[in-house]
Amino acid sequence: MTWLKHSYASKLPNTLFSSQEPEPVSNPSIALFNEVLANDLGVADYLKERDVLKFLSGNEIVEDSLPIAQAYGGHQFGHFNRLGDGRAVLLGEIKARDGLYDLQLKGSGQTPYSRRGDGRATFYSMLREYLISEAMHALRIPTTRSLAVVQTTDKVYREQVNEGAVLSRIAASHIRVGTFEYARYFGEEGDLEALLQYTIQRHYPELFDHQNHALALLEKVMTKQKDLIIDWLRVGFIHGVMNTDNVTISGETIDYGPCAFMNAYHPKTVFSSIDREGRYAFANQPNIGFWNMRVFANALLPLIDKNEEVGKVKAQEVLEDFPDDFSKAYFKMMGDKLGIVNQEESIRDLVQECMLILVNQKIDYTNFFNELRRGGEIIDKLQMEEAFTAWYAKWQVARLRDTTLEASEALMIKNNPVVIPRNHMVEEVLNSAVYGNMKPFHEFLKELSTPYDDTTAIQFVPLNYDAGYQTFCGT
Ligand code: AMP
Ligand code: MG
Image 1 (spheres, rainbow, N blue to C red):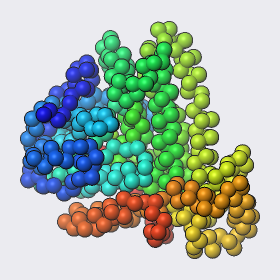
Image 2 (cartoon, rainbow, N blue to C red):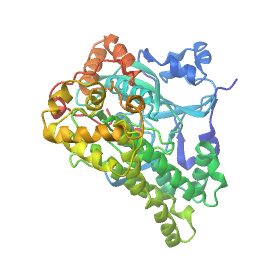
Image 3 (cartoon, rainbow, N blue to C red):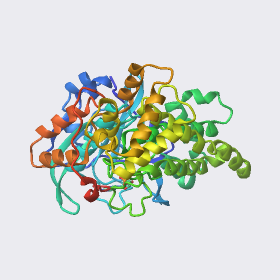
Image 4 (tube, rainbow, N blue to C red):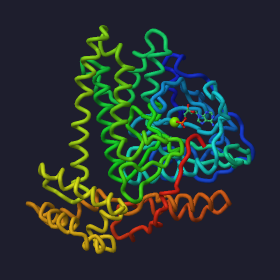
């Protein structure tokens, strides 16, 4: 049986990738293996029969794998650069029940796209990606996933000397907005069209019925990105580096470098050490999502219409819906968090007033919505504020409008996680892990696997922890 397919390499022009074998690592050992995911993908039995360690470390090329590094470009903090997998190789695609999934090794050595990078990844940051991407999946948020982390004894030099690791990443695909930018600006005649047809075939075959495939894909990806960012805002997630090379066409969250979850609500919350202007701040994510979709539209332009000016008009007609659609979806989502089953126009005022109270009082974003339903210290304290009691009375009326308390509570439970990857916990378990104790990591991972269990205790949050918290790219 051939278990890996190679549709990317076999169907796309070779300007879009380079053959590249992973570079061997020293003394690999399996630090984490995701059995549930292996089962979901239908490859558990296959993997059991093989020396997983050898091929997930990149030390051996598994039969029928055809490793490639993908080329892509990307607008990084607004500036266009020529990029590509600088420290990753795609071994091939797994055929699961619901379609193809990329199996990629990350931290697997240099490639033609490494620029000045060493092609490696630290054990710490690959554990971080594993933890947070699995948490996102449990939160029902589309995401790439982690099949395994292989630890090595190779040294990886960043600000300090680190242990190295190779992560096996699973994704519906690694096609990014930046892949389209690459095909448009560095590809040869026909490359962009080939990429478009491949992408539709792989992700959205229903779009073949549309007259204008490029425009239909733009519209689809806009919807996917809108829904994704709404989900991020729902759980307090800050991606941290929404460059167009980190925006997937599948609508999955990708690249867990500098991301973090917000504790106290503030729209300008930023953790990434290099995001000094707050380009990727919590509440700026919708604006950047829109900006990224404009970049996508530009890349697709020659396929939208032969006449570029006509193409621009057609793209604009699709793009201009984004802000309104986003805003509607945002208030609907916040209304759901507040347990308001029958939402009316007035929901906007109710949400905005609520957020103002949270900012002014520096209230924990996650715990607030839980305590609003079950009661607790936060609410007890807020009840002493006039602005809050007035709001609370309006909320009570709104949530019981033409519905039952049970229905309102069920909606709140469904939309408000109790457990998220709190920054201090993430650091604590990762620090233990790099010193050889994986137990806290596993315990936390388990807690994160049922984030909506409303019988779980509300998480403790250290006061002002966020103020000094920083995250990093490319570690
Ligand atoms: P990121 O900030 O992770 O989105 O990475 C941006 C680009 O830099 C991508 O093309 C990565 O493949 C590349 N890159 C990041 N870290 C390394 C590294 N250690 N070695 C080589 N390339 C890297
Ligand atoms: Mg990236």
